[in-house]
Length: 305
Image (cartoon, rainbow, N blue to C red; front, side, top):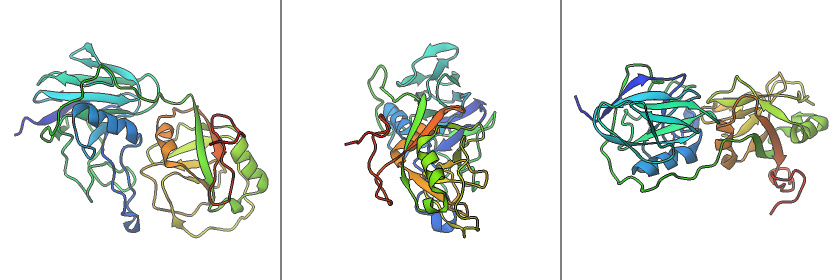
């Protein structure tokens, strides 16, 4: 058995293998999947000298513990958390050397939701449709980690970064999402669209990799008939019969029958993936299908660049 492997000591609440996903298969009913906080995953790979397609581990809230069978370089990014090696403090957001048999512990997130663990060589599970990502909706890719599981590692391909700590964007205290209205905003009353763009929603504890569910004002429909299923895109804000928005993330379904009131800019979705339950959410209209004026999300109602 190869010594290029990781043993899972503590799997955590939900730890999955993720890379840049498998876009381009929606016509087969396959979501794109991939790391929800793409910039954090990419940074972790750069810190350990991996290429951009290397697979990492994505933890959820309470981290995980791992034991490498050979010496490896690791980096933990994303949600700030305590990192230790055999109980001794180690750096977060920087390359860390872990000897064979030592236990790397990624602790609970202090802020945010998801941490990313990159290991030199990358997690080398068998790819499916060109990706090693775990897809919770379709079941493709490796199963979420369990205690005692063993993950193969690839051969290191680069030199780790020489930094003490890499700067990262902090998890949001308030989530401001730029949204282009449509394609089905006309299925809602004018008052509902106004509420959508002016009131505060909050992240629901029911959120997951499929989407960020919200609580808050109920958006009333102007049309009550059934909408035939149509294609769904990353960032689509779907409004189910309960009337509160759901923001689709990487494991979202490829079709849906509830109206989409708007689509969130892709650049804003990593922050959405790090927003804890209870986080305030505001939607800000930007220029899109309806010709809505650009708004600066830092200053509601003010013209942007």
